[in-house]
Structures are given as structure tokens and as C-alpha cells.
Amino acid sequence: KAAAAAAVTARVGAYAAPDHVFVVEALPKTITNKTSRKTLQLLLAGESASDASLVRRETLPPIAAMVSEWRKTGATTNARLDLAKYWDEYTFSHHVVQGRTIVPGAGWLCMLAAETDSRKLADVAFMRGVHSADADVRVTKRRKALQATMGDEVVLRAVVAAGAA
Image (cartoon, rainbow, N blue to C red):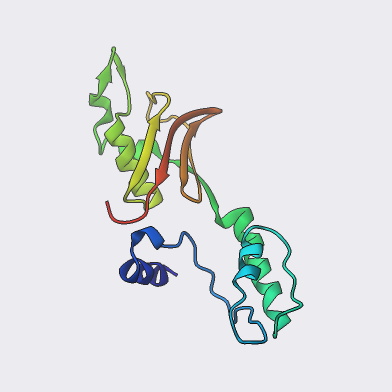
């Protein structure tokens, strides 16, 4: 899957790199042996697709099942950020603003890049400071949108951009 995304990046460009790759046995084909792109687009949009014009109707259920699972879980990740792991390494305790220790912006970028394996973040917005190594911070990534929360409060929002940093 990673090799497929890298091949698209190398041949077409980083702007065309897919967020996700599905590995299937066969694509839905019409009677003229053309890939039914409209059928695939409907499935990816979460809609039902007609199999009336397809040569092999049995190709749709596995693809539909993969897309359905991806829409529920694969497109979204949610994990606790182990802030203590980075607290000493990045010397956050030495970053003091108005008498309080706070995670600096550059520290957030380094942590998020390491935790999400994203080397390029765009449109970063810091919403609230984090002042403690034991703060319960969760990072949610939905497709290209990234959000860090502490309880119900949004701490940071960013977009994962394609390509190398």
C-alpha cells in the first residue's frame, strides 16, 4: 500500500498521492472491459451502486465491504498522546510563559510529526496551552484533518499535507 502511494507520488506528483489504497482481486468492469469508475465513486461516497452493467457482479460486495469498514474506522484514528515521553526530550519544562510551563508550538509540531508519521502539516491552529506532562491529550486524525484534544477542549488543529516537508 505504501509502495503504491510512493509510485503515484514519483510518477504523477505529491498532490495526487492517495490517502488510502484498497487491494482488491478485481475491479468492476463493464461489458466493454472498461473499469466502471462511476461504480467505484458511488461506493466511496457511501452510496449503493448498481451492478446491472457489470460483467462480474461478484466484484462489488468485497469492495463495498472494504469501503464500509474504511469509512467507519480506517479513515479515522484516535490515540492518546504520551506527552511525558516528549516532555524531557524536548525540554518543555524550560519553556515558561507568564510563570507557567507550556508546550511550545515547535514542540507540538515535532510530537505530531512523530506520533502520526506525518512530515508535513499545514494550517496549524493552536487553541489552548498544555501545561503538564501528565495531561490527557488525544490526537484524532480523520483523513487529512488532525486534531488534538484535552478532555472536551480542542488544543490544536492542523491539516496533514501531501509530500515531503
